[in-house]
Image (tube, rainbow, N blue to C red):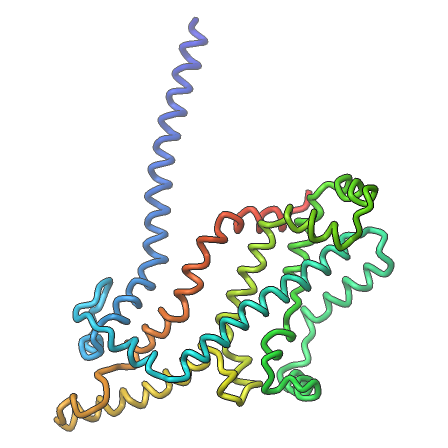
Length: 309
């Protein structure tokens, strides 16, 4: 009887300690979340705040003088729609092609009896540590007629050895007996790949697809180095050019204030800080809205694809 009382008291103490841990953990995670979200909320507030008021400083988590003018300045470029379409097409086709390539290689290297598998793995490993540099890359793209070509967004860097290893490690968790049963039933490798392996590996597929999409969406350097045709400018590069123009406009506004001229004589009451904030919101909103749809796959995809027992 005394042992039961002691055990019940022990359970009660553990239960109380568990409750305290949950409360402290919740408070800690809320503080971390606020720390991560605070800079983004501040940028959002500045993007909707009047530029003249933003230049005075002190804008925190809400706009003091609400305005849409910052977004009007960014979006008034007639070519912004074309650039957004180019970025969207790049994300869609680039991400799907990268996923297909990496997933196919991972499935092939899954076969233990593959001739020369170690040589192939070494061949893929070397570029992770040795690179020819930007000049060599430029010469190769020019020889392949990829300069000023939309395919320069899709083909180069479409294969990631790191992503392939993650996918392969995840696929190793699928029972080999399932694949052998499919082969005994007459299924070919293509059928096994797309009708058995792919549906069973959706968490890692969603994870890799998200990684590829974010990389394509955020990249602007490829446009800077290999694209001269304005019809192929991505949204990120177009906004980078707009940022440079706004910096010049900010100098004009500052000169007007110092000379005593009325601010209304200058086109747009804007500042570089406000425009930069509006650009940041425009470029990050698509990723922020997309991430919740992949979140349920993200954790399981990374953990199961990173550990092999």
